[in-house]
Length: 280
Length: 262
Image 1 (cartoon, rainbow over the protein chains, first blue to last red):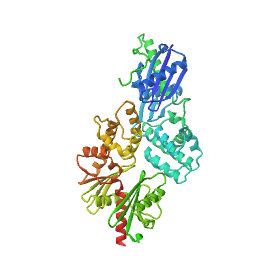
Image 2 (spheres, helix red, strand yellow):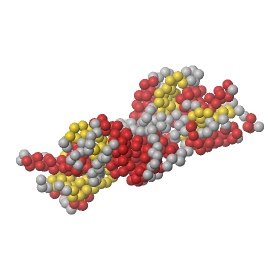
Image 3 (spheres, rainbow over the protein chains, first blue to last red):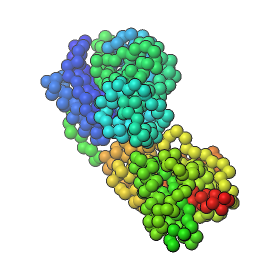
Image 4 (cartoon, helix red, strand yellow):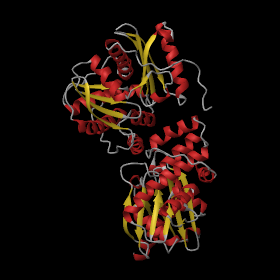
């Protein structure tokens, strides 16, 4: 299929864009800001600039993620469940279970032959999401990107009894004041969150291969804690933040292929990429 | 001789604030400080400052009755559960109370008590901070409003937002989004109070209310929350003048009872 396809994934914490056909031509990850309509335009323009394309050269745009409704220029909005599944299955065809650990939610997706058969999701409680680690890392005075590695140096992980982020924050501060080594507290936190995530995901029955995506996949301490609890290794795609956006772009390509095969016109939206009026 | 004055000290080491109450024959003095990270230091500071306020020398500091989240960190103190302390303190201040709702930083508790100030049954919010006072602090911080001002401010709301989450962490993100959309602070606060009140009500319902119902703990200082709870519960709540020191006062009363018995 000729042409270029864009996927834009506006997550609660990070916004991801890819422009691709077979291969990724340009990709971008930015922090999600509250004014998502403006953000969507900005990241798209930036990605186009990187790819050295004009907007008209993009055949189809699919938006996904929690903020997908705010992508006014998208031809289609698709749920992140479908996009993650499509993206991960294209990168790792043997996948049966996806554990997506996002900034403010956590999902378990079960696949069979690349198709979604079931999923579970937590977006009501911050436990088991990236926000849990972000807040506890801040309480401990450690950078989020360092906690994973630091936790691996632990010899004796402490038990963290709280799942609620607020309680865990209080608990780790108390433990630190008691003189417990930082690495042991971090290891305990990763075990607590891994247990919480797996309890939820096991509702869809975890089967190999298990692929971990989202920001949580970049935390080696969390990945190890998940593996030790599962008893087998998990797989991580090369850029675990991008799988939703890749899936979105590929679903766009699928739609174009289908239209071509059936000799029908591709259902596209009248779209323009321009500065939007906010709260008008 | 000032150190001859008979006094009883109760201290309540909460996760957010430490409270000390000094009970004397003719009067009671109380003192509130932020707990910080070290509960032992917080306890010492709260007690010594409360004694200084009472013009009493430090010798009066021991023995004390301690309660609250950090009570275990205080050596030599006699520890009593915050349920008993809240029941005792509430009954002392508001003798007609048969139910006390305590809205603390990490937990909300509903306590049924008898005319003697004994707790007969209780329920505590469990493993989630969603229905506790912490969310008020988090949102006050995000909105850059002083904690003590959010109650009054929320009463000005004409157009309360509908809060989607009960999680204290997600409430913060939701507030950030609302503010970015241009929602007024008072409307966010009124929505927050309503969501919190609904969650507290669901806990209260499980235990059942016997009148009169008192509201104590730091959360009771928030007039917006008090009004919202009254609306949701459909009854008038009794709030003591200084609701935050009720458990510390209860601890001091228990210290006096202990001394009377021995």
